[in-house]
Image (cartoon, rainbow, N blue to C red):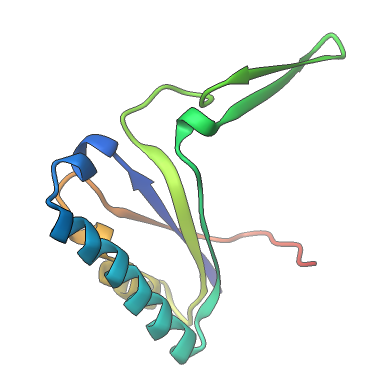
Length: 120
């Protein structure tokens, strides 16, 4: 079964970390990707731009309107995800715990089963 491991980022939490701690996050993600690729559980990953580079499109009365910024104002924002193919929910949780963000106070990794998917 596929699981989406959602990475939500709080910029204030990241800003409070030292340069070495921030670098450890990036190198930890590289190690994590190597692990799940080697195990065959890796499907894909995406990193997203910060909310300042976001646009929201709404259509009202047939007329599209584009506004700058995120759909919702929040402390945290969706920064990216890993899509993994795991044998059990427990394995997905085990892998999520290996992502560096999971060990940082104020952050975490959300694990959601994929219930529908259409491939290319």
